[in-house]
Image (cartoon, rainbow, N blue to C red; front, side, top):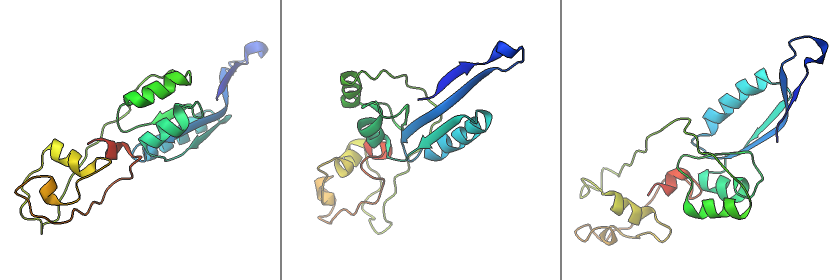
Length: 162
């Protein structure tokens, strides 16, 4: 990770100098924001070398951050219990900081005119790891028609919302 040294031995302001890599992985939603932040940070601290990867919130936690391979994990959701356990097993301590908030929009095809609303629980049936395959599995009065899903990758915090 990044290190800090103090140069003040020559009587100049010198200040504290940061140097080294900063490795960041995680949310594709947070990626553009963190990229802009790190670009400004690197201009202010030219000895710092940020490396940012868009892996999805869950992918960042499980594959990089909780294993100790990154310094930060961008996430569009809070850390989950299994990820907390993985971090603890690997001696990774963390602090959750909210940098921004976003909104999630759910839309259905206008041809699905039998849907006027969906509950969070019904959305969970559609997006869980073993999801409903037809609309009547979500609600009895819906037709026996295939559900076609279009959305974020399953490593995304957006996907994890439901």
